[in-house]
Amino acid sequence: MISVVIPARDEVRAIAGVVRRVGEALAGEAHELLVVDDGSRDGTGAVAREAGARVLTLNGVGYGAAIKAGAARATGSLLALIDADGTYPESALPELVAAVRGGARQAIGARPKLGAAEPFARSAVKALFRGAVRYLGGFKAPDLNSGLRVLRTADLLSLAPVLPDRFSLTTTLTLALAAAGDPIVFLPIAYHARVGRSKWRPVRDTWLMGRTVARGIGWLRAGRAPRALAALELPAVGGTG
View 1 (cartoon, helix red, strand yellow):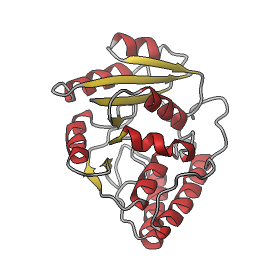
View 2 (cartoon, one colour):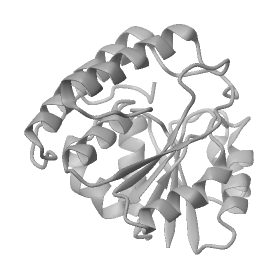
View 3 (tube, one colour):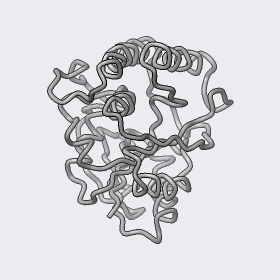
View 4 (cartoon, helix red, strand yellow):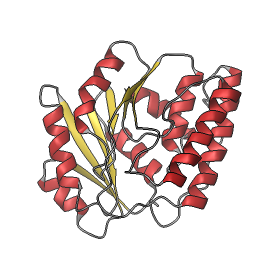
């Protein structure tokens, strides 16, 4: 059973298509679709429900907190994460699932390093962090914070106490499981321009990702995944982004 968790806030223009395409991609698998509607004001949750997803409604707790809440409600042993903005290819999900079933601790959709779908400044910042992880932590990762990935539900839940409530959750997942020493598979994927307005904040989210990367380098150098560390971010206030 595969549980697909889709965190969403004000994604009414894209969510129905994402839900439909995920269902098509996993048509041959037992799966469930759970959209975590995190404080939307545009009817995202209602549209997702009409498209066939289960909907968990929250009040703006943050991207990472929404994923953790969805994982806690998941019934599948495998957990797939995908964003609600239409940027990721849903068709890549079966190959990611197969990689985890084949022994990978986590399978991640790796976006192009540079592309028209993302501002150059944002790509450059992420390249800087990838370089730091490679040269200081010894881990070569083509994409640290992709929002498209498959892992075991139990792994995410075991790390929940140290997973941030905002956008740094994906970076933390990548580095924490890499530090455990088990294989991680990166699958090159296409990346599309998002539908709607981005919720990424350059200064705040770059700072939070940098702090997460610094902590993750420590885990990599120590050769162990975190289990009982303090939260890496302050609680989210007033919204996902």
